[in-house]
Image (cartoon, rainbow, N blue to C red):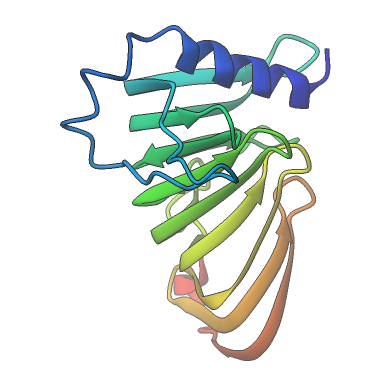
Length: 193
């Protein structure tokens, strides 16, 4: 089974095993009903609180762990609204990259996750000066492990900093392409991480 099918199955299994959404509707901070073509409001069919799930590689090793405070699943649109998502990704060289945000929208059909509000990407086991990327909105494709944004981006490692508008990057290839208005500050010496 490939990673993309397994990720979908884990997400759906997690969300569909919880209790009816009716009792939850009065207390949810995530509710964002959308209209469908019949002019009725789409309602969530499942929810989860304090949820964790792990996606595994074909070899049985964990490759992605997702945690959230709260999530709602909308079956008609295949959309999952996520409150405070935290995603830990293991790279090919066994490093952990963590993505976190205030909220997220996951589209099950194409495995696309939009992270919104105080988005932060950080290397977790990178020593004293981990690389940290911050922005306000970031697109993450779980199948390709590719991230992108058209927003202002700030990348910091130790005392060094790069700012830009827009970014395309591959988690596994460790390749970052900054799109425009790139400015940087680099300090030589012992403080360069």
